[in-house]
Length: 265
Image 1 (spheres, rainbow, N blue to C red):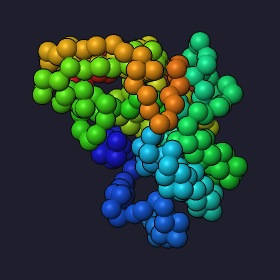
Image 2 (image 1 turned 135 degrees about the vertical axis):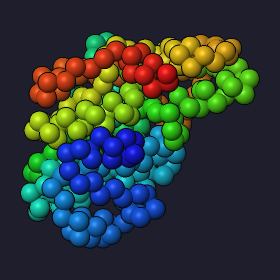
Image 3 (image 1 turned 135 degrees about the horizontal axis):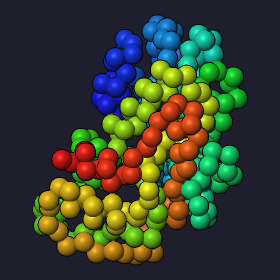
C-alpha cells in the first residue's frame, strides 16, 4: 500500500515516506517528533495493526497502533493546520445489514481489531483536525502479503483450496485506493467516506475470479464460516456504499472484477 501511495501522490507534492523500520507507531514520542520535524501539509497514515486474529490477544499493541497513534497524528495535524488522511475498515460494522453500509450507519465492531480501528476514527474526529477518514475493505495487491497472493501461491503449489463463501464484502485493489486518495487530496474532500469498488462477492467468489484471471488451475471448495473458525469473528456482510465519495470528489468506482483483472493482467 505504501509504495502505491507514494506513486499516486508524487505528482501532487513532495512525498516523505517512512517505513515501519524507521518509525514505530507504538512509540508515541517518536511519532510526535517525526511529524514536528517533517512539518507536512498533509499526513497520510497508511499503517495499521491488521493481524485481526492476533489482535484478540495483542490488544495493547493493536490499540497503540490503531487508536492511540492516529489520535497523536490528529493532534499534530491540528497544531500544524495539516490535513490528516487515515484508513479505516469495514470491520467497524457488525455485519447484520442486508444493504451496503453508509457512513452514518450504526457501528458495532465484533472484534478487537474493529474496536481499535473505530477508536482511531473517533480520536481523529474529536481532535478537531482537518481530516479524511476512508473506510475500505478486503485490500489486496500483487505484492506484499494478502489474500490474493496467498490463494495464488497455494494454488500453484497444487493445494486444494477451501474458502469461506458465506461472508459478503468487496475486494479493493491498493492501486485504486491510492488513486482515490490522491483525488481526495487534490479536490478537497474532507470527512468520513467509504472507499470501495462497486459490486460485491464472497471470499470464495474472489478466489474463483482471481484464479480465472491469473490462469491458474486449482481445486476450489466453498465452505462456511463455521467450518473455518477464527479467534476473531468476521462480519457476515460488510459491503460499503461508495456514493458519498463519488459525489464529493467526482470519482466513479469500477466493479471489483475490473480492478482485479487490471491487477493481474
